[in-house]
Length: 171
Image (cartoon, rainbow, N blue to C red; front, side, top):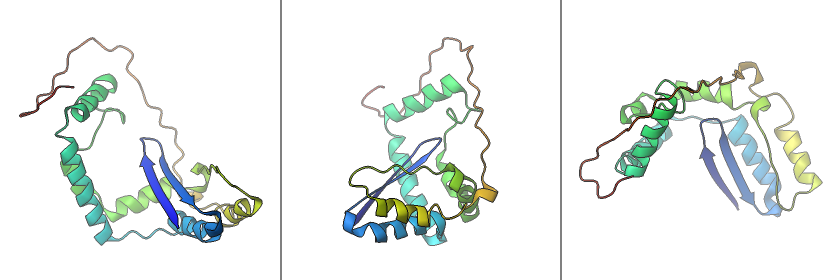
C-alpha cells in the first residue's frame, strides 16, 4: 500500500508518498514512473479538466474565494502571476501539448527536492539515488529562469467590492 497526495502553489508542486517500509522498492519504482515516464492521455485530461472546472465553479460561489482573488489582484495587479487568475474559459484551452511542455520545463532533475521522514534506512536512500539520481532527467529543457516578480510598492488605498447575487454572507 501507498498513499499519494499532491499540492500545488504558484512556485511548486508537492508530491507526498506515504508507505509501509516493506513496500519501499515498489514505491520508489512507482515514483520513478510518475516523475520520469509520465503518460499524458487526452481522455484523462478531459476528465480532470471537467473535475477542476466543476470545483472552480463551486468555489466561485464562495465569497471568501472571490474576496481572496480580488485582494491579490488589487495588491499585485492583474499582470502579476500572484494577481492573475484563471477564468472558467481557461480550462478549455489546456492541451496535452501544454502539459508536456510544462512537464519538460518544470519537472526536472535540477528543480527536484526529496525530503524523507520516518523510518528511513540506507536501502531507501540507495533506491532513490539509483532511480531518480541516476541521470539529469529533463535538464536540457529546464526553465530555470528566476520569476523576477515585481511588486508595486506604491499602492493607493482603495476599496474593492465584488457583488455575488444571492450570497448569504460577506467576506
